[in-house]
Image (cartoon, rainbow, N blue to C red; front, top):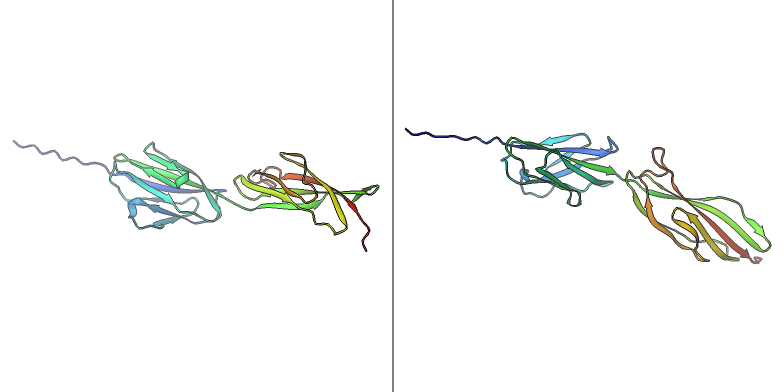
Length: 219
């Protein structure tokens, strides 16, 4: 008697899910999936809330899917539903080795970026004490991005030729009585929180500059 055993191994699938912050942000995100061939470039594209599921794949094989760069967004997270899937934000890639019968879902989250803005507004009129004058203004740093953004804040005087600046003293977040001298310069290099100065975010960063100067009569 001859006995033949036929073994069937259940195949696997991989699902790629797209999520944006904020929800519904407009944008299309391309993905290069190893199971769709070795040709570089986007094999498919997704918008927020959309997903793409592979055909049946051989299990116990390592697959990868890489998100291509998208203007105006930063990839901030890759989460897979199985320990057999691992996301690496630095390389924009999820690596998946599904077991038989498994459907591994990996969600790529992109956060929308926006400009950092700086507004210069007079805080007071010119004040005089003897021959010395002072004027003050604010520099307000706001952030339209949904992630923290780096910024460098500098300031330089723009005065008439008969004005001699004695000091430019700045106070604000992380800065106490910093004197930029008569020519100005860098105030601070720091990070502004996500959505700072926006209706849905924290307060903007406000720096106050007090300029002390003297004047000679103009011809």
